[in-house]
Length: 102
Image 1 (cartoon, rainbow, N blue to C red):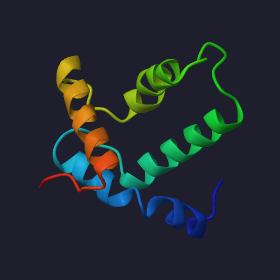
Image 2: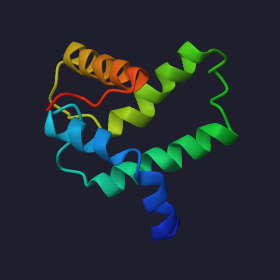
Image 3: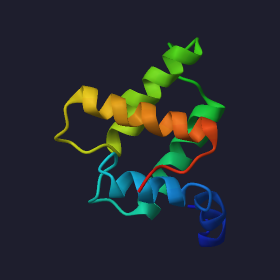
Image 4: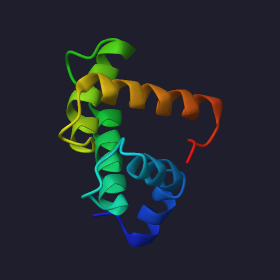
């Protein structure tokens, strides 16, 4: 288990993004931000050291992340296209360095 100090360091850049995503309905509202950070950290560490054997391209790795990592954080009752559209907007905002709109 990560120390609370280490977790806080990892969480700091994610907090505004996760809080905004929860507020606008792109991520679950029944899970704490701390648990989301822990989930993302655990999975990114796992993927870093052992890629899924079938993920030989970036596209295959992105598909894996969407199916197994992000699926746990997404609201359960949404149409798939709504989720894809929201994640595309979040990704575009991350790439541009902008904060998501309120």
